[in-house]
Amino acid sequence: MDVTALVANAKGETVTESVLTDSGTVRSGVLSETSYSAITSHLTDGEQPHFVARFDLPANALSWEDDQKRYQRGKKRTTVVTDRRVFFYSTAEKYSVPYEKMAAVREESGNLVVVTDGGSEEVFPLTHEDRTDALAYVETRVNATHSYPDETTDHVTRLEELQEMHERGLIGDDDFQRKRDEILDSL
Image 1: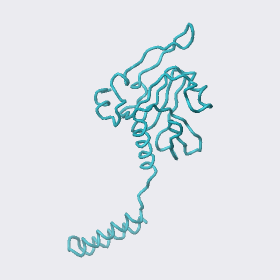
Image 2: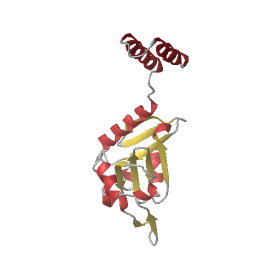
Image 3: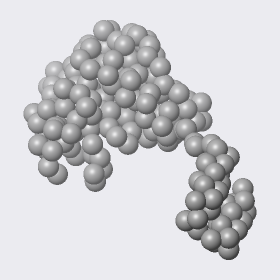
Image 4: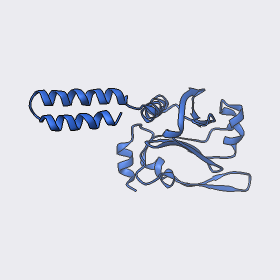
């Protein structure tokens, strides 16, 4: 994995070589330590990270009471926005939602809240760096994933172009009729 290229192609400034490759252990109790893995180990082949929020906030600093217990279990918390999905992992757990499974997104108390196609909500904590850009990027990706071109408009445009080519003598009567029929049959 070419970490230098990942950093160069990232949309946000929070994707750095040290952030992508950082791994190690953190104290998870009085006498215990827990390992955490580098972001690069969570990326799929060809996946591009664009924004990273990595932090060690105490659970009481989080805005959502329901999620305080979830985040408290993981001492190293990371949210990553990539070109394919948004994922969260800590030393205790991980979860992700690909863009095609997102029905809606919103910001709430500085967190990215993803509503899935099934109606469940996943909360991805964000830090103040790149928050606005990360939210805008996710919204754009979700909208692009769920926007479908108007096929009727596409067919009308193709018929108009075909008609113009026929009128200019670029295609003959037989070719015009055959292509016209193909377009109309695909409706």
